[in-house]
Length: 70
Image 1 (cartoon, helix red, strand yellow):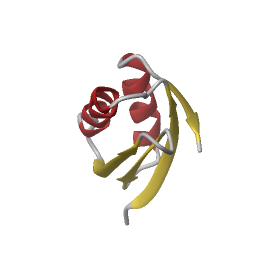
Image 2: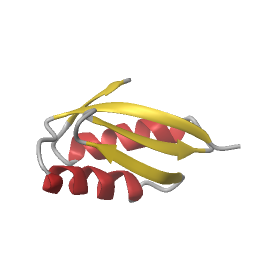
Image 3: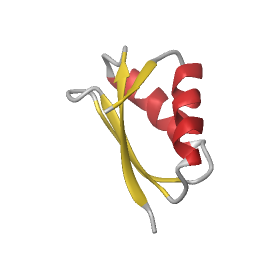
Image 4: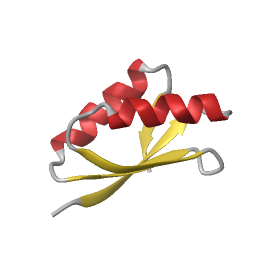
């Protein structure tokens, strides 16, 4: 069963940034229903496996943003 996860993302300040984070998360196998909030400075997504969350964190970091658990 898919579980919703949320990560805080520092450094997102425009739609281009939000798009970059969205693409980074969507590129990680095992993610679904990705939503980025500029106002909330966070990304939410669904995963079936908790191990995916760490891969998402690394993908966002590789895109140039700082990530913390929400």
